[in-house]
Length: 302
Image 1 (cartoon, helix red, strand yellow):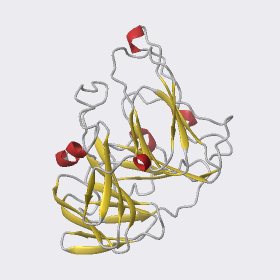
Image 2 (tube, one colour; image 1 turned 60 degrees about the horizontal axis):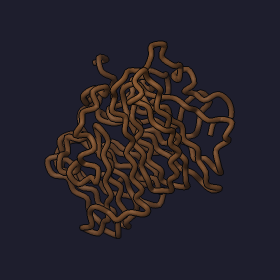
Image 3 (tube, helix red, strand yellow; image 1 turned 90 degrees about the horizontal axis):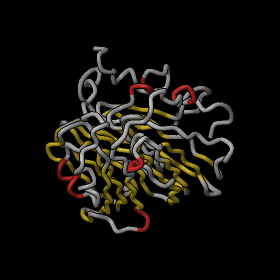
């Protein structure tokens, strides 16, 4: 994926203080390819899975399928990985044609997504969408609070006010930049470069996050997710290492502060998308990393 130094290397430095004890650190796994959908209607089949702050909805749709939201509480994300797929997004009395291989941010309120020729798509919502939380097979996975994950707070509204904003994923790689990162008021999405063939096992990137989850959405190929729980001073926190093999489409929600890294394993294209809710501050502070930062300011900058 990266021939030389991983652009994130300076963010991986281990904390000097010992790891905190008594944290709930449970991964959430969803393999959409071998499980039935939770919802089938209006020409679409949809699978759901939740994290602490978000719900991911993955849909496979037929020609003319419609996905509607009434009274949506906050901004949400439409992700079209296939260049051949397209959509029409209706919001605020307007219709916006959305090309394939793109990411689109849809404002709060009433909206509708129409797939004229069908296709596959992912949508991202915060847990403010209570109806979607209930639809998740793991809806109760966070009944025990994650006290080390701060309560969700949206980032500032976009420059120029609310409107449907779409961005092409056809962005060339650039030395020193990590992936193709876009953010809105609720999410940060990083479309990683496609890994052709298995990842070099001598160039892995184990790291951890102190207080936020990482959602890894596999959309092509296969992967092994490696997870390691820190040995804290309390043996009750200790867990066996895990190596989780998945195909696509699938989702793994990686909890903090678990050490993790992922290896692409198929011979073809391996496509992975990393998702964070709310956006990451550290990535946002890296010059040039967030491709649409002019549209979505950071907290405290307006």
